[in-house]
Every structure is written in structure tokens, then in C-alpha cells.
Length: 192
Image (cartoon, rainbow, N blue to C red):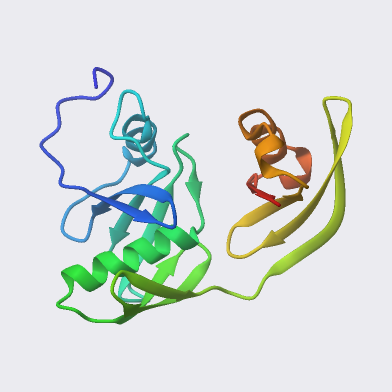
């Protein structure tokens, strides 16, 4: 990328968890610091980069077996991602001589990860917090009813009769950045 100084090659792994695809970097033996938001924006770009729903960093931790950081395609850092954590669990399993259970530090706290079978990883999320039912926001001449819940990362849930009738590319950013979910924003879930 012309916006970055010349870099030495960086090894990465492409991982997928329940349809979310990530670029995973193992930072336990290398220094990956200030460039991570810019790298996430560049590398997650599906037309000009590697393409991905996020950049996962596996790093050292003083509190757990490893630390997971996740950067969204816009360069922002999220506190947690369940599918990303499952991918980190499988990566640790494949790299750490078949070990099957770890505690992984995330921005939302220490999470337990366990490999339960061939490419099957179970995570223990914290109990849901900040549950808010029946929130409304106004968009495009319509009131949109939402529910909010935090499972380590905030989610805005929109229940609809037909998910294929929702223009998620248009509606998702409006919900994510709405004042109800500031300053961090929220993952937008459309549920049929």
C-alpha cells in the first residue's frame, strides 16, 4: 500500500467463525503496536486488501494464556467479538500442541475458551448486561424499534418479519452510530 512505509513481511492466518472472516496476526513474538488501526483499514478492505470482517491480534498477557485484540475494518478497536474469540481459541489449539482450554484476556475481561471437537470451539461469555427493550429511533420517516444488550460488546437488535427485506447497508450504519449507542456504537443484529 503506498500509504505505508516499506514493511518486512508479516505472517498472518485467515480464519472464519460462523461466517465472520478475520485476518489473524500472532503478536506474541513480534512488536505490533501503533500501525494496527491503519493496517486493519487497509488489510480488511475487500477490494484492495486481504479482505475481512476484522483484524485479530493474539498477544501476550500477564493475566491469561493470551490476549485478544480486535480491530474493525474502519480501524476502530472493539472490546470483544465472540466469533473472533472462537477463532483465536482454534488458533491457540493448533499452535500450542493440541491444548484444549485457555483463559484469554479481552477488552471485556477474561474469557474462557475450550475446544470441544473438530473445528468446534466453545466460549463462555459474560452474562448479558445493560438490557434495554423497546428503544425507538427515527430514520427515513419511520420509527424503528430496537432492543439493546451488552455481551462484552454492545448489540442493537432489530426484530423484523423478513430479514431479506432490510437494507442493512443503509440501516446498519444509522443504528450503529445513533446517539443511543454512543460513544462506542453497537453491533447491529437483524433478527427474523
